[in-house]
Image (cartoon, each protein chain N blue to C red):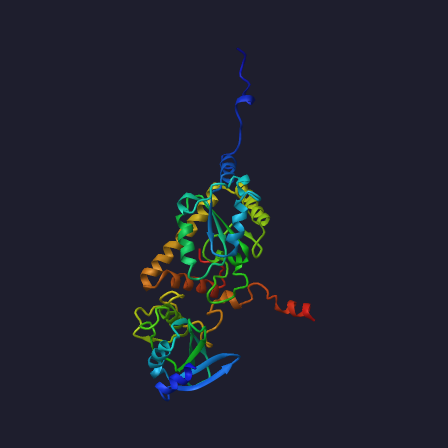
Length: 165
Length: 202
């Protein structure tokens, strides 16, 4: 299995691992991410499907950046998680995977996690001078739009509950 | 040769009435399709429902050649300045139909990303409810717009559109002064209007 290979080649790079119904996840130190990715690329995981992130607001290292990889030969899938704190940059994977380009821009846009050595780290979805990063847990859902939360239009929610009762 | 009977040769009417009659029966739709309403709109234009029966046959994909803007789908805050520019570029006199709940009020999307109704940024004449509305509903919306056109005065329509141009000038001024993107300026105008209890920025 690929994880044993990584352990053999890069001892100590994998901080933690868990399996859930055949899905394997490894937790990697951000400083060693590039070595680990190079290693698993050689082991056959040559397609980066997605880069995303999770905001765990109360944890000390606030974000989990999650990389999903696919082995095109064996069809195995592997998930890599890296824990990063507020404002801490991660190395960009664009040198290894072209598909990392827009995915990392999306993570930068919506979570405010910077990536070093990215060819053009701009916002992907929101406009350039948009204030804040909307997928952070402390960002209000309405983004401060008074039309979203004031009593303009009545809420249907109480009515829906009475229909279910 | 006998005397000409004037009743056979002359028809009397009001100028507003005859011009509006022409306008309402030759609407040129411009689809601004952003979501599923645009898919439903395809069947409105196709032979089964056929909007050409109401004189709105010549659909144009250029705002310069059309005078009825159909907003077909969710308008995000990022699209709001685009929609304003499209409306500004249309031939006068012009009318707007907001099709579906997203274009009318933001619908189910009460979030930072979605404009809570296209009427916050451009003047809307007819709102068509539904998610998406059935083709009959869209046709009824166009028929209601035709009724509205036949009742309106020419000068009122002109002033209505000029109020919008004034808001475009205000937007450009703010953009110059603050050095912000058009999206951010429209967003700030909408939020400022909302905080003062206003419903729109035009």
